[in-house]
Image (cartoon, rainbow, N blue to C red; front, side, top):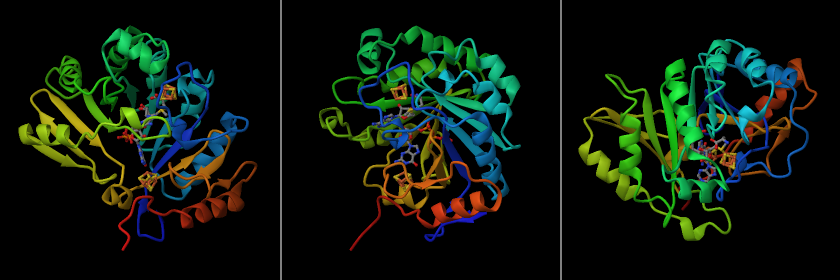
Length: 299
Ligand SMILES: Nc1nc2c(ncn2[C@@H]2O[C@H](COP(=O)(O)OP(=O)(O)OP(=O)(O)O)[C@@H](O)[C@H]2O)c(=O)[nH]1
Ligand SMILES: C[S@@+](CC[C@H](N)C(=O)[O-])C[C@H]1O[C@@H](n2cnc3c(N)ncnc32)[C@H](O)[C@@H]1O
Ligand code: SF4
Ligand code: SF4
């Protein structure tokens, strides 16, 4: 088991398989990648993930850019070691036609980004995306058993801050007798130029906390999930949140083969391209020693 200098156990791997995307969301952090080099080939992704598996990692998240743009995405999923869970975070636009194949390849579940159900707002946020394709993708993922599907909603002032209840109603339509779709409400990470859209989601969380039938506190980031009638809602509030960072159990790999100890830093990357065997594992362990909570209480 990998444990960093702060006693944080690392159980999850996040691999960006591309930096390319078919949308251009106004807020995109691209998983913290800047000026990426050539994308890793499937063999490299497989080699790196096996090294992490041998070091005790049991869950992997595929992300990007838009992972479903990779023509070999099914091969990538098939090439993983036997992780307990393989999930993808996707914008959902290409999911409808791929859901069954991905399930057969060994994918466990998906997160689908959908900030609004309003066509014009969705088009504005994503730079021209078609909301119906995403809805079709969510439906196909449910039918394929890629559940629970998490619908990622980044809340933005003046754009969708009043749509949480609508989105919850939308997810509850898929929950017949069990929770197949969870709404995940995400605080906007204020990249330069995004300040005007920032919206504090704490009052929204308080509102649903008051109505919850049960509360699940996740070991990852101590994130709270509230169980409601026929629905569930989780909150992701990283900003200035030392509790969130103290419970960060994930390590990242960039699309061009660098280990990234923290989403919000690029000054401590460890390049593992071309490494194998002991050298690769040593580089991974070096990256683990570079992990530090980004938001922490300082005197
Ligand atoms: N600051 C910070 N934000 C994160 C981190 N992990 C995820 N996020 C944010 O959380 C949002 C959702 O991420 P997803 O890729 O859907 O995955 P997840 O919800 O973290 O993971 P699962 O619950 O396992 O599906 C994204 O907007 C990320 O920006 C993290 O380690 N640090
Ligand atoms: C970078 S995207 C990559 C995967 C895929 N293209 C997608 O959109 O789901 C991963 C997640 O990060 C979220 N995200 C991107 N930029 C963000 C920001 N500035 N603040 C909060 N979340 C953000 C997206 O909404 C998405 O749910
Ligand atoms: S779909 Fe995902 S990767 Fe593409 S621009 Fe939007 S948030 Fe970024
Ligand atoms: S910002 Fe905090 S939670 Fe996110 S990757 Fe960095 S240390 Fe982990």
